[in-house]
Amino acid sequence: MAISDNLRGALYMNLSMFAFTVNDTFMKAITETLPLYQTIALRGVVAVIGLVVIAMLKGGLTLRLPRHDLVLIGLRSLADVVATILFLSALMHMPLANLSAVMQAIPLAVTLGAALFYGDRIGWRRMTAILIGFVGVMIIIRPGSDGFSIWAVLGLGSVLAVMVRDLSVRRLSRGVPSIMVALGAGVAVTAMGVIGTAFEGWAALSLTQGLMVLAAGLMLIIGYICAVTAMRVGDVGFVAPFRYTSLLWAIVLGWLAFGNLPDLYALIGAGIVVSTGIYTLLRERKLRVEQDRRA
Image (tube, rainbow, N blue to C red; front, side, top):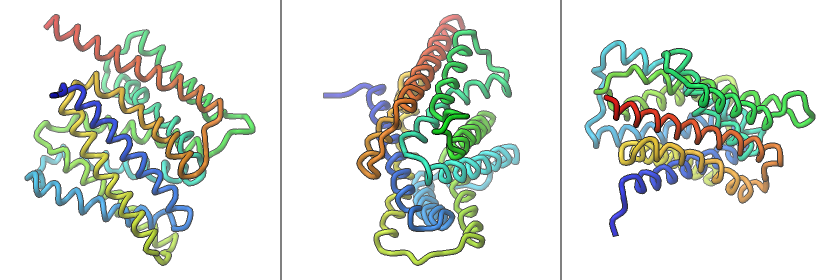
């Protein structure tokens, strides 16, 4: 029985979020015994090689891009480097599900950033949802309480860096292959890992650790391919909310791998963030449909 494009898109998005969360799980486990920057560098080599192979097979490997696009790719790559450092530093000290809950604020931050930097119009309904969503983030990180951690602040900083990363590509030319954008970020993050090892040092790599790094890199590639495919196969407004399944995967994998479950505050905050995020996406989709009908 044939399935609809939207259903296929949703399945791809679910697989993407699963792959990204498995990657996070491996990275958290590896950095318990290996230096952070060494782990980033090794995973980056795996991911870059995979992306280069995919780009060559798809004919999307090119360096002949307009200067404007190269600058934007450079900005996106720099933002990705910052986001990676902040996220993985937080991941080393936080439960996987708690950090994932904080990261669910990314769609809200991107919507707000688009209004601030690109002049996108946001009605009072979406603005209210965004503000409520950030209240949910505050419930998760609980500033001023005994449960507060500076690592949660780094997670929030990673959200802001991802916002810059995502907004920077809005001005890219349509002809720029998506694989080149991902490859640029992959090379930048890998280079950052290599540079970091000069200060942090290098540890001997066991077979188990090597296999975990390889698995993390492969999951990163699978996550990227499935995310791109999901957005191209299905309707964006239908597919995008399934990004929030990453929180469910994080709760399950965090419990299975590390025996950690989010506390009540994290669950309440995550519920608020996810609910407002889905509402914002659906509201945006509704407004876009109405605009298309008027055109």
